[in-house]
Amino acid sequence: MSNEQLYNYILGIADNNLILGQRLGELCGHGPNLETDIALTNIALDLFGQTRSYYQYAATLSENHKTEDDVAFLRTEREYKNALLVEQPNTHFGYVIARQFLFDVFHYLFVEQLQQSKDETLSAIAKKAIKEVSYHKRFSGDWVKRLGDGTSESHKKIQEAVHDLWPYTQELFEITKTDTLAIDEGVGVNLSELKSKYQEEVAEVFKEATLTIPENPFFQKGGKQGIHSEHMGYLLADLQYMQRTYPNMNW
Image 1 (tube, helix red, strand yellow):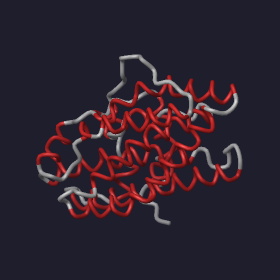
Image 2: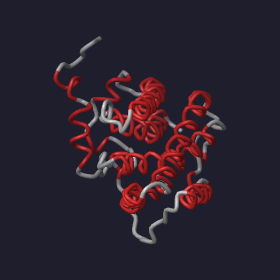
Image 3: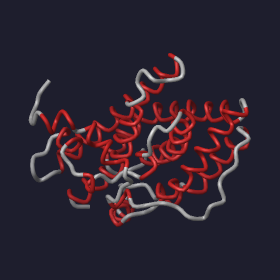
């Protein structure tokens, strides 16, 4: 792979973490209780930490001497390659948990395989991240069960969230041209090989949570090509404000 191709492949991984971390960061101080509030904030920090490692590596591959901050904050909306799922808003706590779980199961399977990458840096990032991602999946899975098999109201809310968010899940397994190049080089993860395991794990948790998987055969996609939902622009306005307002600011 060329440096540019590898750069784009890394963005396809890291942007999911950045955008989901930003969404969780919006919840700081707004969790249903103190323990959950802190847990969600810590998950956001984990995701940002992983993102920083990816962006630091990506910056070394750029031709324009970019820094990790340039990669994170100075791209336009169409230049972000995250899946649509992670940019969906924090409608209510059920949405937060459903979104987190649907991503966490995928993220764990992905990072587990990325450890085998022939790219030593990507492999090292994955090996460092796997324990954090494992905790994320356990945390969100436990909450799915608590809400789904809890009160009638909590069941209604989490099922509503699953119904609305499920159509975004199949994009996680969409293979782009950059993905294909990375797979052929032994650098990337073959996403199609993760799909059946993903569906099994999700179905197992949903069964215990008394939740049903929507039968809607239509799925949303576009994020990996930079075509995002209406929510993305507002998210980036918050995320990029300081860097855009005070260029080259240093702490």
